[in-house]
Length: 80
Image (cartoon, rainbow, N blue to C red; front, side, top):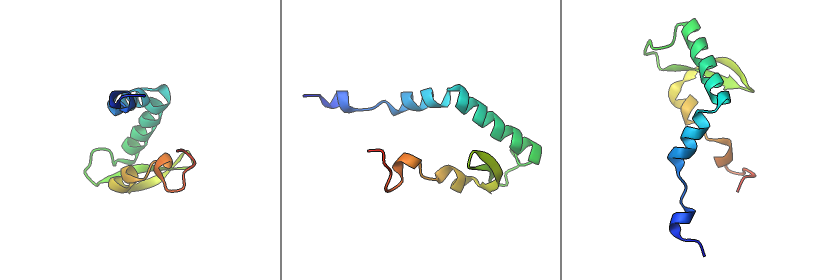
């Protein structure tokens, strides 16, 4: 039987590993570049570049952009 310690996940380590992957670094760099080109980076307008289907499609409130549910957490997801 597994102990509670064996069941607990290290979310901090998982997040760090995910965010440091080459794909994520490239993705973030692309967003920052787009925001800078459009003049919205750091101007306090609370807008952020948004993706749809793997492409940047425009701007959206940063709270909505970051608050969107992760695919695996959406109701009806196939992941268990």
